[in-house]
Length: 358
Image 1 (cartoon, rainbow, N blue to C red):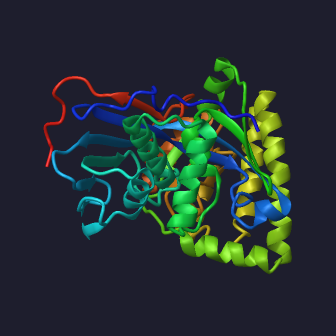
Image 2 (cartoon, helix red, strand yellow; image 1 turned 180 degrees about the horizontal axis):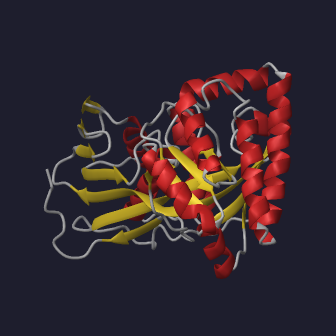
């Protein structure tokens, strides 16, 4: 696998007075979600088509004068304090603590925030881990490739913390842009797609991102899906195989500018995904989806593992506003977004910006 270097660190550790910031983009997964959830990719191979968007997980770091680490999470409204290198004192935030241990870091103020709440289906939790890795690597002057960042994020989330989930989010947040990502028993391969600016503009004006008004804990859904794969439930195995085929069809439709077909494939894939486990959709989400289709939408899907969060809707340009109005009247919230070609970024803050230091 080719590994593309990522500019997380410049080879020189930040000074004790530097404020380091990082951001990692959230993502839209168009098709293939579920085929990236172990053990399926190791057994049969999986693939996902996804893109990064201009919603982000943010991290800010600054050194402290003492040995402690203070972590402030605005999304969770939590504060955690770690005393030196001995472990947590109170209110631990597991993913941050795990990374601090891996980087053997101390004497730090860390602020974390995200443009979307955990459980929204945009991969915000994985993006936060990627952003924190980026900031810590920059602080320590550590060089990491894109693949190394994504692999470390996956190891922290899925192995260290044993959080149920797939393999796509960490790579989407690290690489950015549009990618066709393949998962096999030999590893992960990210294939960036070359799409013209005109084609991206055309795709964008067909899409609506609708917040359904709730988040979900995906672990139960994914646990059931995993059990279905382990048990080789026929309907689930057939659906996953068909989802892989549709992901390839979706990639071809995108690269050949066949946008109406793109929307139709989204619709077919959504109906397949709902067969992977109970709870992927709910009656209110199904009703919202049908409202969109009755107003002229061609297809769409619920993002993430299912159960709540963001609904992606594909509608012809001439019907886009009508679909928007109907969704908002039904209680959905349309969130504007743009595609982001870049992955995780880090930088040194300039000016006297650390005014909220604890």
